[in-house]
Figure 1 (cartoon, one colour):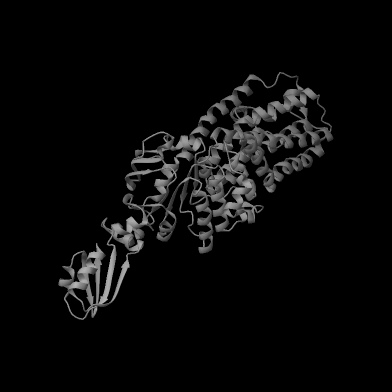
Figure 2 (cartoon, chains in turn blue, yellow):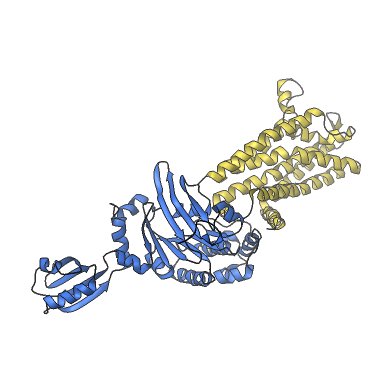
Length: 312
Length: 244
């Protein structure tokens, strides 16, 4: 249990709500993040991830509820230099070179990191002498990352840090990120890439339509949704009999092929072999996070596709 | 937290905006020689024409210099980095102080260049008169610094450059900066005397006329403009930070 305040208090969001012109963006969100955790806010576009991050940064005032960062309101934590934020947008200041912009940003913090170290870590050292207005999208993203990092904050809030960059750039980014998270920093990042959340977060907070849908490790999230599928070739036996097996949620037949969606694949498989010894070509598959994601967000009455559509 | 570094980069960013800064330095100088060379021995409103026009052009250039931070504010807001700054420990007060200080620092070369130009056409003042005139101009520029901030926070970046330029030109026209006065008496003259730019142009004549600075009326006008504009700038600033 995480205490509400004190430096060990981590980040606590309580009943957080925000609407824009009557349209709710975040609806009564409760979340507690322990120091040192790496948490992914995962959700489709328009789910309320950016609004949540902005409220944690103190950029947006919640309509209701509170945010506490290491025991104080976000504005105080920002003032103390505890928070480093990477926003989705932000053209680096003009008439400066990359290195100068990072040195300037470092000067705002009480105990910044060495500028050269940060440039190297973020891969911005390759173009440190470049004018900030002459950067590619991927380079500007590294500069924003360096700016978030240079103050040596305890909490890093990253809003879709890899949006719009290529696969290689993404891999480099997360490699740097791992190194940083390993130093005991608390990291919260918003993403709509399932594989990123799966690969880099200790914990995934699934958000859809401004509400928390699921919260746990990637494995737990997958388990929350229909977990595993058993496939096999079975000429005889009707679907109803298959569905009646223990641990089976649903059964489908396509010609000789049967597909069982299971809540408990182990029990289902034992029963299946006992009842239908003729079954062959058996295959047991774990559900993907993507399937879990679709399933969990679909519970809200809209399919994620609708939500995506509405967000456009 | 080191505000000197922030100040240094504010200055650097202005200097690197070479076209803008070059124009604020060159334009008044060119106008001065163009107009005053032929009227070296002329007089204007009871003072020598070169002294009057030197002051006018120094004011003209320094008005452009001090509204400059407004343009930078609008560019930074449009680019989105202003939001990035708001999630650093940089305080708004430190940021604004650095911007004002850099604006004034960069107005000084304009003044010095025009003084040199004036001296080359025969303007002779004592050291204390040069200093007093400079002091009056720096004080009289306060409303223009604030106008730059107000517009920088409120106006979209593409409309800002013409807006700032237009405002400086209007204040110059009604303040008698361009070598003529629109009126010598009547209601239009009353309007002119209610503008800080009018009194800025009078700075040269005032110090020659024998110390003591501006008449009370001038101080009231400049104080009134500043007192009215500063809260407007504060509201403009807050409106921008509340934008989500």
